[in-house]
Image (cartoon, rainbow, N blue to C red; front, side, top):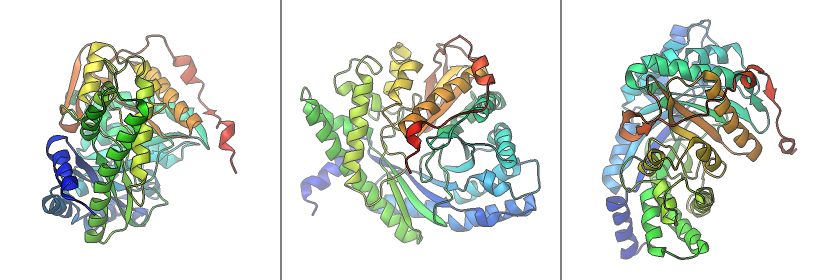
Length: 452
């Protein structure tokens, strides 16, 4: 039973501490749209998406208005497009991306994810066609997001795909150079990608999912930061308990919105992703939470331990608040989207190597990090391989979303606006990884993958 104190506390969380529902994402299966004729397939894709999600945005706005809960984004995720386009007799997959973009605009959503391929053990012809089309597809669309899964704990790491993705990221940056390489902000390389992730740019609708499903992503770094201010100097077990209680309240609100959206859209409720997703706004930063635990600046010694505590406590608190927690669920550390991370990177405290260490204990991975425009493709591939190895060995989802900044170098800044924010260009190691990447093949799965 809610009392007056609970209600007033929730109002304060929304009004002053940046609490919001980050996204309502409708997942839609497009397997029924497969057709040997690519033109007909694109027509089917557009028709099914617009029919399935025609009320998504309006429903989100109605819930937002009636409950007084901010819902920042309404999004769509679809079946990995390589699986759908592979049935068509064509060499050009860009029209499939254009069909997704057109459907997303018709529905009025913020983004559509699923221009994706799953190649952790090998690439089909369809996978390779889609991957090679990514630079042009992201250049010619506005709302389409793309992802490629190159590794898993069960399969190992497909190093041929890793090598290719380094070149694709560079080509995507070049294709969108007039927008500071914005296309790369919509491209994620995964290890252990999940099928029910509502967050962009890595969302896709997995083949094990229902025909349609509603997934919700919540966010509340500002709420957690505010809660920790009340326990200054207290032991870490008190800190953990405070985060758990706060995560419970945040996730409970997400569960309410998810169930209501599911009912109104007559679509099964999938999961609540209880990730702490920051924004560039002051007071909505994961980095500031870590500093509230006693670190002078995010990135200094102790940062990884603080992040491990935060990530674990968020999960423990959230799983008690929802009937189905899924997605990525934890703490995100996207540099450009977190004002505290931006400040730490500009101060030189937060470097790429420290961020890599932090990804061992938090959600996802090296996210929204700008690197010099002349960074070799092999270096980008090697960064992907390192991050995929962390995911593979630790049985967790990791990802890389790097932003090679065309014409810019260390100390410069790229501006993307909105939730994507701005990113200081960070240095990479100048020593070459070219011979390492040139080997190709597959890094085998670890011994602990043999669990059956």
